[in-house]
Length: 250
Image (cartoon, rainbow, N blue to C red; front, top):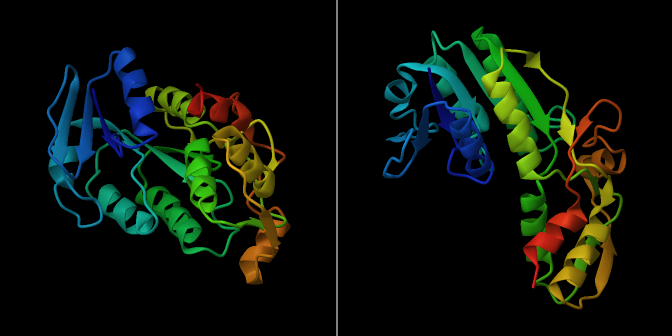
């Protein structure tokens, strides 16, 4: 009863893999680079975008937890995966909230990846999550390097802690296929400008903020809150402030 994990060496995978091992499951982790296996975890080489090594990785797997993703190509990678996954009893996928709502290539690719899983006929579970605290920190840290930090007006996030997402995914992976399950967002809705200020304060930096307006369809979608799920999403526990306290402790 092996679980194949794609993206098992990334931010989310590093939280999920120990939880699944603690539940007594044997794991196979797909990686583009060689890694030494450890007790109960086998690493196999493959590349989802290139379609390399997937059949061997899937062979004998009962369940697939599909976490691998990037700035582009998630739809291609997922189609390559499901073509090799015939006979798998359960595939679990991590999507993004409002995948169909935002006119951005990343969101469209995530929506197309979901469709590939659904159209495959494989028993599946799809969990959509908001932006992780880790991604938010990477974003505001990059912005904080500028002498004047742009503060996009009307852009709000529901940042969620990757550990909260990992715990939910572990439960879903060990359970029965459930189709599309409720989204998972963070416990609060925050303006990106406030998140930038929180980061600068935690990092001990002083930077002036310059309000800017996001143009076009993307700006209108964000100002309308199209990226949010305020009604039906489950909420994680860890806040942005708590995450920053951990990152900058001492």
